[in-house]
Image (cartoon, one colour):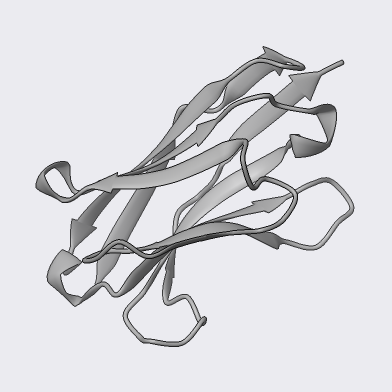
Length: 119
């Protein structure tokens, strides 16, 4: 089992920044990929960014490329999402997820943290 707990969400003005954290516990040695997803009101959940738990690979959806940075600190068992130049359309519940597999299917999810960007 893997447990994920997000923090760092909040209300910010457009153009501002936030850093989300995802604390990871449990079978961390079994994790292959960590990712951030988001879901805005009335919309489907969408992929934001992913990172290899051991390694250097990162991947971003086009809409956040150049504004968001995903990173991890294995010593602290924590993943981060640094969000800069935030836009109102970034408003959503952000969730972290973990996959024990090599494919894109996530096995574990956090409860989510609300990010609201005002115009």
